[in-house]
Amino acid sequence: MNLNLDLQLAFEHSDTPSLQQFELWASSVLADYKDDAELTIRIVDNEESQYLNHQYRGKDKPTNVLSFPFEAPAHIELPLLGDLVISAPVVCAEAKEQNKSIISHWAHMVIHGCLHLLGFDHINEAEAEEMEAIEIAVMTQLGYNNPYEQQ
Figure 1 (cartoon, rainbow, N blue to C red):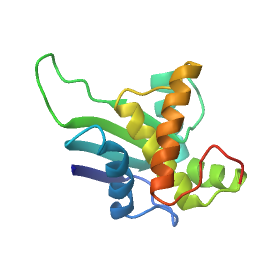
Figure 2 (figure 1 turned 135 degrees about the vertical axis):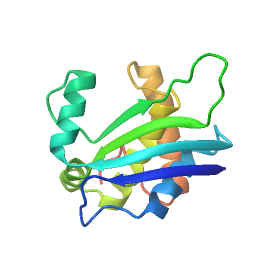
Figure 3 (figure 1 turned 30 degrees about the vertical axis):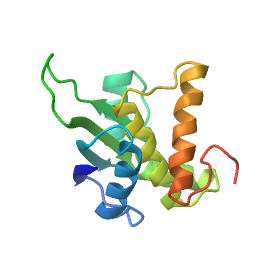
Figure 4 (figure 1 turned 45 degrees about the vertical axis):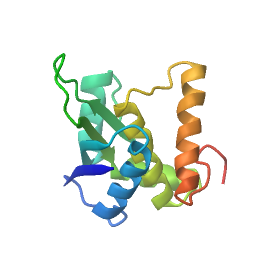
């Protein structure tokens, strides 16, 4: 798979993964669906995450990952998937609260977000089960634990 990843560090945190790690995680999940893909991953603080979450989802709090799929005009094929916005403070706090390694939680957020960019969702139980099964398979393939099991 050919991945063009634009990593934007609007907020730097000591536990922020490298560009190569983000590329590995994204390409691991996207390879089954795309030959070529372009996406942006933007690492932000809680303030930007909360603003975007409020603006686009009506939830006035920061969140771990927001997915903004790109929708091309009809009949135009582009490899652009969209943008992921990840709050470093939320990811690190959740990892600690859930007793998970920070790096595995970062991987999970990228995989989860990429699946949203591909059109997967977890609004109803059937969709959630399908999405979670893919997340678990990719995480396991990468050597991480099932992100939905208590550690």
